[in-house]
Image (cartoon, rainbow, N blue to C red; front, side, top):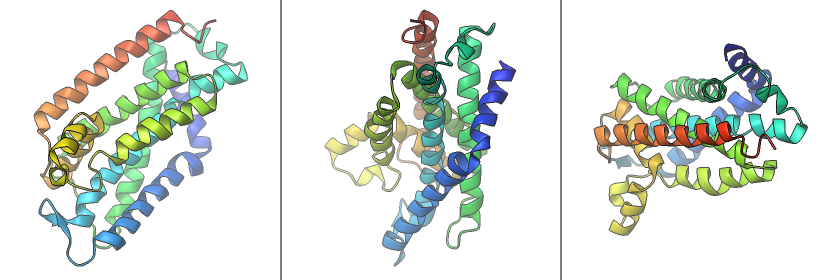
Length: 250
């Protein structure tokens, strides 16, 4: 398991310009665009400057997207290139295989998050210092594990890279952008508030933001428990799918 984890980390680290620095730059561009467009004139959201409000959401959004991108590649690339046997033949249990893949993807997410956070610390007009480190760690790590597990499940299901890209473009992307990253959900109409509260990304981003700003538009404890339960269910489903060998052992 340790060898597979190190192999997966080395794989994305060899192309770190694409896997770490590019997502970090994209996230920073979001910050620049939205703060220039909406952050001038003393705009505030939930009682804090707009730049401070949007920064934590951008960090966790970049982390989750990086986690999904990494996890959705490994097994899928093995199936397409005919090297899936390298994952299945070693004496690894299903739990060890899943732990190594999810752990490596979570590591990439943390590296992207740290890179963006350090850059934002140096960005003028942005004040992003953790007030509740436990909340930052809980929602940051569980958010990364959530998307990592979803990425592994996607790589098992997908038969070509277009399938993984479709999940990224039509599921992960919209759920990330419509989760309150750039706005407070309280400003939406009741119907759209209900839709937002059905989005697990909303609780992750809101809880992560609370760790920096001590402000949230969702119940923190309930959100923390909900994300933990979702992760456990998704991990259980992914474990069962891999153990059965669905689409990877035929």
